[in-house]
Amino acid sequence: MGTFKIEGGHQLKGSIQPQGAKNEALQILCAVLLTPELVTINNIPDIVDVNKLISLLKKLGVKVEQLSRGTYTFQADKLNLEYLESDAFKIDGRGLRGSIMIVGPLLARFGKGYIPKPGGDKIGRRRLDTHFEGLIKLGAKFRYSKEDQFYGVEAEYLTGTYMLLEEASVTGTANIVMAAVLAKGKTTIYNAACEPYLQQLCKMLNRMGAKISGVGSNMLIIDGVESLGGTDHTMLPDMIEIGSWIGLAAMTKSELTITNVSWDDLGVIPNVFRKLGITVEKQGDDIHIPAHTDGYEIQSFIDGSILTISDAPWPGFTPDLLSIILVVATQARGSVLVHQKMFESRLFFVDKLIDMGAKIILCDPHRATVIGHDFKSTLKATTMTSPDIRAGVSLLIAALSAKGTSTIQNIEQIDRGYENIDERLRAIGARIERVE
Ligand SMILES: CC(=O)N[C@H]1[C@@H](OP(=O)(O)OP(=O)(O)OC[C@H]2O[C@@H](n3ccc(=O)[nH]c3=O)[C@H](O)[C@@H]2O)O[C@H](CO)[C@@H](O)[C@@H]1O
Ligand SMILES: C=C(OP(=O)(O)O)C(=O)O
Image (cartoon, rainbow, N blue to C red; front, side, top):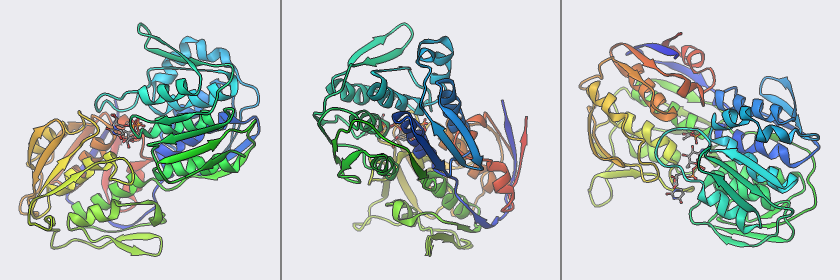
């Protein structure tokens, strides 16, 4: 189990370039299964989850070549579909959440898609109903083995249809879109997720020859085509990483520039941090955070009531940044209610922040009230374990702002989604060491 040792209480300075987006990469990599032709992908982050998916694709028979840092070619011309029935696949498929998105492309192109219950963060129940209900609507037969927790869909061919999704699931929409592009006829997906990564997927599929309209809205209309060809695709910067660095800058009173953030794809993210009183400046396509020497003050609602920050499907605020908001609020001037609506086990890490001296009341599994210290009292260094990827980074930010040396265990959770985080943080002045 890897560990970070962090000496906190130091100001950071400089610029940091966000990595390619983890959650986009997982969708895009699965889409290479839709064509026998060559697909080149740029800005692929070198993180555990993505590398696991690339390794799974290789075992499935995809030819993978790394051309340079972050750039790979993929060719799925001859696949080894027996791998899907192997014990190795049961282990590999469980290793990450994103593997679920191989099902739609495999079903569409080869008539069968299997997957063991996928992994990912233990942050509450993570249903797959939307995925499979959508694929069944396209004509697939579904089977599930309770014993192995193994899912399968099969169909000779898929037929386009109208569907209203029960919820705007991100990976669910991606899976259904990737199946529908090769279905016969027209598919309409209403209540589709519409976040930028899904838009990126749709744009990539259209470049490959798919006919998807409504991209960016919650109604996607897809005219099925016979086959898809190769393409070139470049991943967006990771918006969750960008939000993490905004929080890091404020909490450590550091001046930081986050470069090439693709502002147009950040939605409400900069404004939500502004509501905490953080100055988020737009400089071209960079974000500049000045040093918050005098702290930052949480705004109230117009009627004077306490601010609530909650998550919602895009274009609402992403649930993946609420843990960061929570930690940053512990040093703000004022109070805020953080309401995590989507996941029921993502706020329990506040116990660790409370141990460090933060003033937080966990009202119930979904809601926490934070009363900021306004830097009048610093957090105390401690030893902690990273329960999930975003809580892990939040604890890391807390440790960088705390006085003394903290230890974070189980950093595999952080490495799952943040590329070379210790080296990149050292480059802006953080004192962080990786100890095995
Ligand atoms: C690999 C990947 O891309 N993972 C992301 C993806 O996960 P993933 O695609 O698994 O998440 P979903 O969008 O399916 O849903 C997440 C949770 O929110 C609930 N839900 C969802 C939609 C909705 O309208 N109402 C609602 O309550 C679901 O029941 C579920 O518990 O999207 C999540 C929501 O942005 C992010 O946290 C994950 O980082
Ligand atoms: C919850 C997350 O990831 P995953 O869906 O891969 O568990 C995340 O990226 O915050």
